[in-house]
Image (cartoon, rainbow, N blue to C red; front, side, top):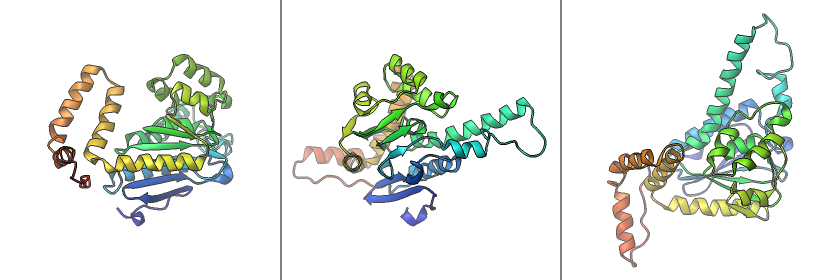
Length: 288
């Protein structure tokens, strides 16, 4: 697809800085990139389209402005409309069951939009900086690789606004091979933690001095991924995510079923021939 094939989404910049690389930038810096409900659904729409675009093989996700990746949910906007509104709705009052059903649907819609990042077929690299609260972790625990700048300030913030995080953090952090004691500590207290602590426990795999350097490193990593066979890269992401959520036996059966067709691609033949011949140039892989 061409960039013009993507509809403009408010508060997001979508660019294609290198062949097969997409850069999604949250762009609401005047509000510390805080998310409104429409922004959450825009994020999902962007990643669903990127997932199916044969001209995209790797994606970088970052936040605009010097102060924040995102400060989380825009609490003021949420208090003015929607299920969390503090204003009395006009018309007939709903009973508890009907309010609860509406709220459940609302939560599931939020979850589906954020999960589109994880379900994207292409690898996604997050670049976090500055304030990275609440939904910052909901979103980036869906990403495949996380980098951050030295100034990052993380927090699982939801207990400070009176609720349990329900968009993904509490579900995905325990799957991220992090110490459960640490997960519970930061989730139950909403305390901030910094880049060094995030690196020590394994929440991020790289810490860089500035947002700009972290973004440059992420784009470089994306280019490395984009040079590989898209069949191999997308299959690897799929099998890793499946294996995370299933037993070893199930994972082995799944990759066997997956590769019974994937290894028949021209990508395998071209890669093997290039590896056997030092004089042969890197293979160019067809779009997927």
